[in-house]
Image 1 (spheres, rainbow, N blue to C red):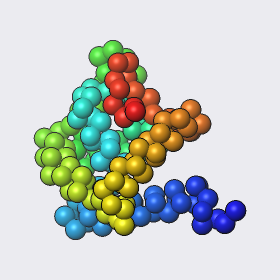
Image 2 (image 1 turned 90 degrees about the vertical axis):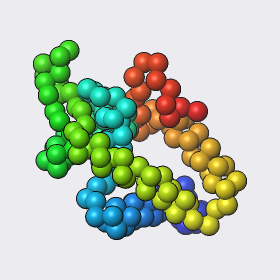
Image 3 (image 1 turned 180 degrees about the horizontal axis):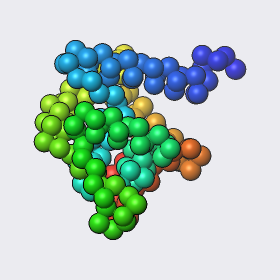
Image 4 (image 1 turned 30 degrees about the horizontal axis):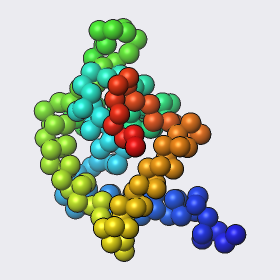
Length: 159
């Protein structure tokens, strides 16, 4: 099989494209934010008070390195960490006013850049690609070292 047609190779290339487009657009707006940081901010916005382990599950990110993400967000003044009321060992995350403002400004830009990531696909092809990619991610979730873990009753992201 030609490496250029292998799913892993194509997924890696698409990840490179996605990362490049995201970083270029953030820099163009003067924002120092990665795609993972954006995902973390969005998750904290939607689930205020969640702990770092839950955040890792919500964005399908490695639990061992989510601390570094939240450290950087806290250092930038975008999230606040406080001792969790339900588990004194855990830190509850909430957005700061600066975090809310950045997320509000960046969200439309992030939504807009999605089409750039799949440049060359018409709207019907994009929809089909997203359907198939979501299906593959959902079915392969258990194989991941950082699986998506949603809170009970939350169906966001599930197809």
